[in-house]
Image (tube, rainbow, N blue to C red; front, top):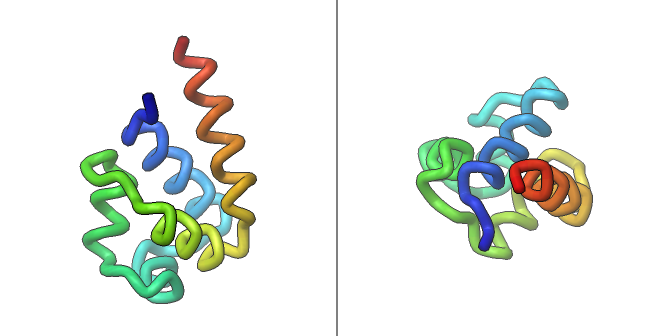
Length: 77
C-alpha cells in the first residue's frame, strides 16, 4: 500500500533540493499551496495528474520521484 507520509516526504525532499518554495512549485503545478502542503505532510494523496504536475513544476520526471518513493518504502520494510 502506498504510504502518503513517504510520498509527501519524497516530494518535499526533491523540492528542497531544488531550492524551491511551496508557493513556486504550487504555482507552476497550478495547485493551491495549502494542497501541496497537505500532500507534503502526508494528509492528502495526490492524484496521478497532480503528481505529474508537481514533477513537471520541479523539472523532475515523475518516474524519478516514484522510484525514490519505492526505494524509501522498501527501506521501511
